[in-house]
Image (cartoon, rainbow, N blue to C red; front, top):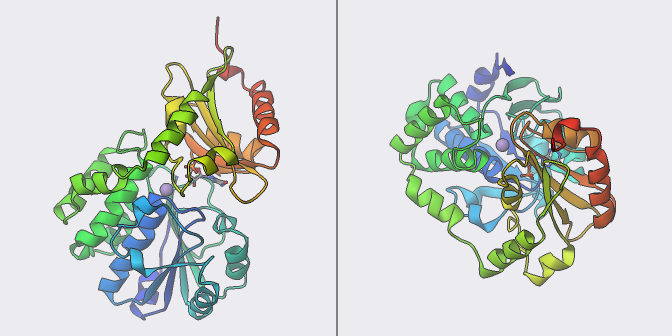
Length: 340
Ligand code: 5GP
Ligand code: MN
C-alpha cells in the first residue's frame, strides 16, 4: 500500500532547515545507499543534511560515494546527539518502527521536537512521522528516494555519486533484480541511474567480489550444517558464536547464506540462526517462496518483522532451544507440510 503525505515538506526544505537522515541498526545496502543518496541530493539542493547510522556496517558497502560523511551513533554519540538536538527535520529511511534504530538512539529520538519524514517500503509503518512517503510494494527504499527526487522534479541533479548509491540499494534489496518485488518501474529507475553515471559492472564487483577466504570457509561450514526437515518444506542453518570467532567474523559475512537454504527444490521457508557475538540472543533471518508470509511469522514468534518473503527477528534462548522452538511453531502451519 502506498502512503504519500508530503504537503508542506518542500517549503520546509526550501527554508534551509537542518536535516538529519537516519537508517536502521545493522545497516544493509538499502539503508546505506538510501541515506547517502538522499544526503548527496540535499547537498546539491543546498539543504544542510547529516547522516547518522546507529552502528557500523559491512566493509563491502564502504566504497559508496559519501561513505566518509556517515556518523555512527555508537561511536560518536555526543556529536550525533548535538545534531539531533539542532535538527528541524529527521528523515527516517528503510524502517517502519522507531525501535529498529536500537535502544540508545531510540531514546534520543523519542525526546526530539523535530518533524519526522518516513521513507520506507516495509509493511505496517508505525505512526511516528508527520510526512510520509511509503509503499510496501516497492522493492527498496532507494527506489523510493529516486521517486521522491522525481516527485520534486529534480532528476537532473542525480549525478554518478547519487546514482551509484541508489543503484546499490536497489541491487542488494532485490537479490540483484531477481525477487518478485523487482518491477518494470524498478528497471526503468535502474536505466535512469545507469544513464546518470552508475557503473553497473563496477558496482556489482565492488559489492560482491570482495570475499575473504574466512568468509567463504564460513559459508562452507554453514552449508555443511544445512538441514532439510523431512516432513516440512523447511530448511535451516545454524552458526554458533564459536563458529564465527573461528572464522574471524566481520559484519556482513553471513549475508546471503540463508538463500542457499531457500534454493533447495520445494523448500518454501528457510531460516538461519546465528548466535550474537556479544549479547545473549540468537538472530534469525527468514526467507520464503510463494505465499508464506515471513513478516507475520517473524512478528508472531520472533519479535521481528520485515517483508512477505524476507524478514528477521530474534530469540532470547540458547541456540538449540531456539531451533527446537522454531520446529514447534511449524505445527501451526499446515501449508508448510510435505504432502506424501
Ligand atoms: P535480514 O534477514 O537480511 O537481516 O532482514 C530481512 C528483512 O527483515 C529486512 O527488510 C529487515 O529490515 C527486516 N528485519 C530483519 N531483522 C528484523 C527485526 O529484528 N525486526 C524487524 N521488525 N525487522 C527485521
Ligand atoms: Mn530495504
